[in-house]
Image (cartoon, rainbow, N blue to C red; front, side):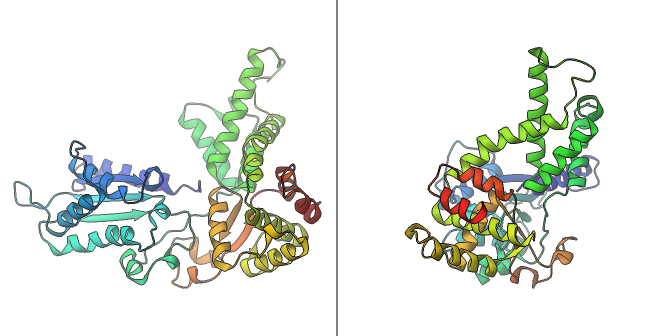
Length: 375
């Protein structure tokens, strides 16, 4: 999350729209559907059909909308001059939320582009799916995999250097000279903290925004004075980050389910003892089993199996607690992953410090286990 996937797609679409306006590209329609905003996965049909028709007056049931879409992309409707309608580019964001037991929704959305190629009057359809799950394709049925295809781009977490560039660019885009509001060391510190804790660029934005608000508030209250008192300093970033952890991350950790807490503690323990940033899932499962058995607590046993562990890692990754990285990093860095890249187990790393895990679980049923393993 926060690695620029949606922003990249929308930037490309903006460039395509500019080319269209210049007359160098044929007309096309762009439709974006965020699956996380849907009340039900099947509502994706309704939202897509309404976007195509441009009307919400006669809201169809999801099954009727799916039928209408199927007919539209199978036969289409020629324009006045006999040409097919413009190409539609569909962005399915947070596509993980469209996973159902039969996977019929994903099947249909990725099958319609093929159907549209058969009829000369059907509009062409291009589907771009964005997922936060590293192994999404492995979880798809063969029939869905064959329709999704092999064109994939992998986005890695932002590094500190890249984060600095993005933060500076963001400020300059708003007409602000970074040096006028931040000490150079403070902006670098914020970028490094963001990169080390999650790699989520939105985390960097939030840290800087909160620090600016803090300084502005203290200037207004007369708590800051002297030369360059208006600049955000490293200590301001530290105060904001500490406050942010206390109010958001700690609260999230305090509501961890027993097996989630077991996973986080086990990963933190492995990270602390080995100093390694990456842990193999087999190593993590062995550690969880060992800690669960040694604890003697029923709510930690039995330790989660492989599928359960993957599911928890997906959820914890979306919450920026852990990061999943493909072991075939060289082939993923340029967006041309080999077919074997997704078959290997990902490397798992903790995005927060192990002592933050102890602090976050303090006062919960998991405090004793955290202090025993990480204290």
